[in-house]
Image 1: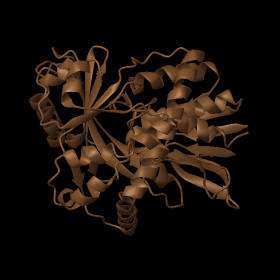
Image 2 (image 1 turned 90 degrees about the vertical axis):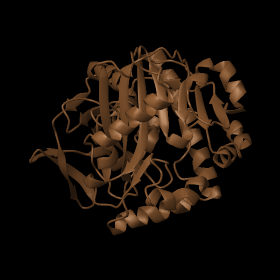
Image 3 (image 1 turned 135 degrees about the horizontal axis):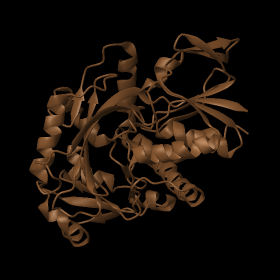
Length: 397
């Protein structure tokens, strides 16, 4: 069977991998000039298998008025301008309830742990270079109420295979002494020994090379502008004003997914930023997340990736210099020895992530025959990529 995958980011490429493993002929289509030019390019790099919690949670629900009023520097939020945005926001606030948050957390954990197992299997079959390391992860909290809510259902998570542990700040300092150099009034932490790191862009480049060896076809600089259907079944794609006949397609276009389909999907774009610098004197070995500031600190070889912010501003990948400066200044103030902040090697990036109200992705067939969706991984596209691709491929026998 010949299957066309739209999107050459990490979700699209892992989907192609599992389809190829099933013996299918695959063509990957992307509007950019190469792989991983969107949200996969310079994301946080953390494989957060045991710490992939949804954005919607009770603590955010109660803080939401301050978010709307612009009092949370980590989030920029524009009031809904249309019915779709208003519907998404309504659904999101429902997902912030204690019951829904717990269910979504457990669903994401199950998918994340599957991804971990699948990546391990993949790396035992093919050789990929992407600065992969089993680093473990520490999430630091300054708000006691938020911290206590996050650890409230550890028992259920452990039944699924989570190794999360509640740590005091003294405990954290024993396993990661560099924490003493990070400023913050921390009240506690969650630690996962099994979480990992890896450069998503390098992973995508390596997987792309392997897929080429398997005779996978790639169409770059190919913008899909229309899905053409006949009797509710996909028949062709309009690409750069030309038609390409297709039988089955998988849309892995991230935040652009809904613009390609005629059905309404509960996915909106959320913009994030990253800075990649040479590492500084702070020799930290574990991934660190500052929960209250929504900031990730990741060691990728001799580089440090600083990632942060969640801007609900629509499809916009431009560099907002004010936000970039805020992230740079915040990171430098919190951990001045973290990176070479005064050096010339600095790479800035901004990208949009596809977020559902529940933070759980949409994987499976649409209501149009031959059209499948694999999108909505939100902040965990890298973490969930293998499981998302695997589960989507299961729909093709």
